[in-house]
Length: 450
Image 1 (cartoon, rainbow, N blue to C red):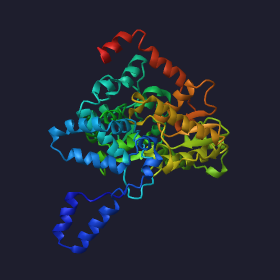
Image 2 (cartoon, rainbow, N blue to C red; image 1 turned 135 degrees about the vertical axis):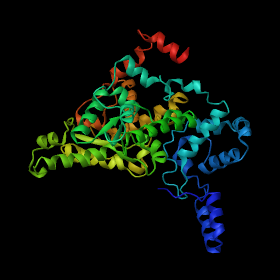
Image 3 (cartoon, rainbow, N blue to C red; image 1 turned 135 degrees about the horizontal axis):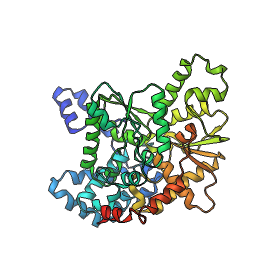
């Protein structure tokens, strides 16, 4: 957990103790956690560098606006944007990746504050909800649910979260949360992971919901909170005590709401820990097994590749829980593949450019960022780039398909590597385009744009 400044309430509580030493310590701590305008963040990010901004300045402007009465905040936001359009431009191009403040000496944290600005922009009419109508994931129909409906993607063989909530406690204790991209575009892979959980003896239910990240990027914080609360209410009704996430971003979105009530566990940690138990239950010693038998007992059928490099998720930056487990899985179940590391990794990982729905505002910056990642991965000489976040996998796949001759390196999500089931991205992108002009085109256009 990152250090945070004491709030006014915290300081008031300290003052009531009537201890000059504690008062001094509180003041000292807050000074230590106040931006010194050293410009380290400015130098680390082009979004800040071009207008010569730093996170302390962004924070100061935000606090000045929210100190006003709620009714005056939209006009104040419009005024500052008119006076300083470069601020608006920078904040709309932010991917919320946190790279700018990853090494901040005063522990400033960029993503949360940069996203807070989106809510101000939305309330000021600078980000109309209609601009994000395809990813209004709290509605019945959005791009993911429409895609699943049109192409018949569903999971009737699995217990859904809604069914588990209706049945009540005692049937499942775990929620499997693949995230909107994987559950929509990679049903075979989602199914393989679900069947593996059952084989491992886990009583689980499936959610095909989104974590609400697109709503947050659109500044619709209340709607995102309501979506997540609905999911939490269903988990409570089902007696669920653990959520297994594939995407670190989903885990981030739920972390504050679930707090100590429901444990959030990265899927790669479950895969690593439970696979070892599965091998042990077989009564055989792992060291005495051939690799193929070891993989079979663990429930994996890995793809073959001579070497790997890993693109860590920016949401995994703080503790690298996903990244560490993915590397351990590859070492144990794909030992013949040499592991090579990118220059930017773990805490210093880059961003694929997809965060914050930036592609819809400035596709050039997304394109530059994803190709920067691809170039760095290719420079390792690895045959395969392993991604942690399904959205990163999607973004890299799209960039490679749009590059004449491809990118010169395979792009695989870690679940593709382990289960040996490739995501057919070329076909997926074709389907995403053709569904607007085919049989369901009129319905889609009326639903989203009518």
